[in-house]
View 1 (cartoon, rainbow, N blue to C red):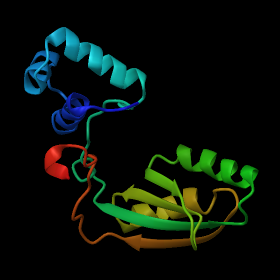
View 2: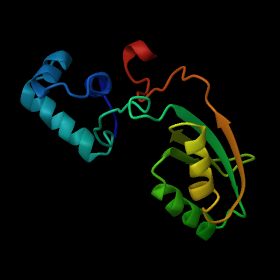
View 3: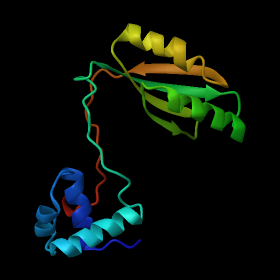
View 4: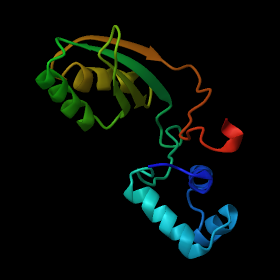
Length: 157
């Protein structure tokens, strides 16, 4: 899908103000409400907008620790990868998981209440996942930035 300047303005506004009304969004990007609604529907249908969500605070929910975990598997066979990915999706503390190139097969971002909670996650979840041969954990000392937006707007370029 080819995005024009109005599509980009809609996306940029939604990234900053996800709860904005259609009327306010239309006004912001210079469209009628019906034209804005049609554009929004098209962006959703084409998969440019993958969904809407509330961004929760891990700290407010009691998860004060973030661990970055590098995982090595016993191989790169399709079944090995799919078995691991199915298992990692069941772990409620995994915030993100990425299949990687390089030394490790996967990188996970994990939320834990404290070190003892991470030890439980490591013992009950990570070491129990299929085909895992190596786990390397690092702990975030401070979050500097956690973007959920991409640089599509004019002020981001």
